[in-house]
Image (cartoon, one colour):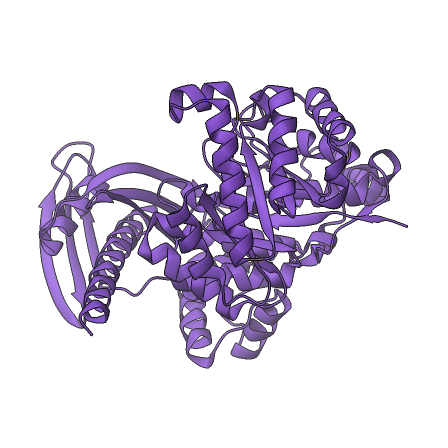
Length: 519
């Protein structure tokens, strides 16, 4: 009988720590609901002590998402644990996840403490968390660089204090698979109490080995894996959920008989949702969910696929929910055909959302002639996941030449009122961005700018992704168009709209908290 591997998803916590990937409460809830549909066992919804907004977002997920365990991260501090419990106490199945660094470099350089002090803090934190919540996970941060004997002592002590899950993280992606697997095996031998709890691993991808290390840990006794959709996360990211799940499914002959509760046909849809909402583009050659993961250009490969798909495909695209790529719609396709295809792709739209999508579809179809599945998915996701628009582009006129000064003239609506202006710049996009700042009457620092074609052909849809800095935060904007200049302008406005949205949200939350205190 296949053993169960618990899937602990930390997209909403570790994944959201990527600069510019901050999610609104509604967006976090949207992803959490999809993670429940995907079938993850645990959703780590956030780090509540980090901000009142994150506490509220985690609380909303805990109240509204049923099925998975809802976890909240906290340091080994009473105030952190209290915030985590306040956030998840209403969950159907709550879990407090507390952690402290155990490697000497972290203890001495970061925490300015010693081993005995850290051990005492860990035990007291677990005891306190256990007094609030039955399910308590403890993480030994930087475990792969922790002295082995001290790691064993710490794990024994926190299990005795009441921990139900022990997590052994490769926090900086330092481990090598054979080494990490051996460490997990030795832990199980040296700490018999691990048989009474779930042993978990959390691997980072700094050396590109997160999935390999996770699989090595499973083969040596780990039964929970901490992962993210698309491998998002700090620095080089985390172990990707889709990679470890499909490796377990595909290579049972070598890894062993293990099962997860993941509905693999929801993988691609979840990947697209996370990419769209976080604004983190999935690299084309990304395993399982990249746009090229099931593409074949070599003549030899194409010949093999036509004869037998197993020659060059070890996973069937449909098993992970990748839609057929040959579907084509045109401007002559009616509402029924478009609606049917959207539903086939797994999206559910309200009437208002569908009308917005259909109108945008017609605009693209008039320019592109043929609208592929990828095009339609982009249009739908822009409608489903957009932030309220304070500013909206209505008209743009660009003057650009090999000689002369580039100029941009824009008409932008602000809550129904049209504002027009023009500006010059070093190029058409620079001119347009300066024009936007004149209209908005604010300056923003452009942190990054990226343009890419997300569909094929001369009339491909171009995607612009920008990050702007405002009020100490980084805000991401993403937009698509068959005109790359228009996409760039809309992306800049989207980032500004997001900055304004979060600023206004923060102000309203502060006022609400002030009223609550005086009430």
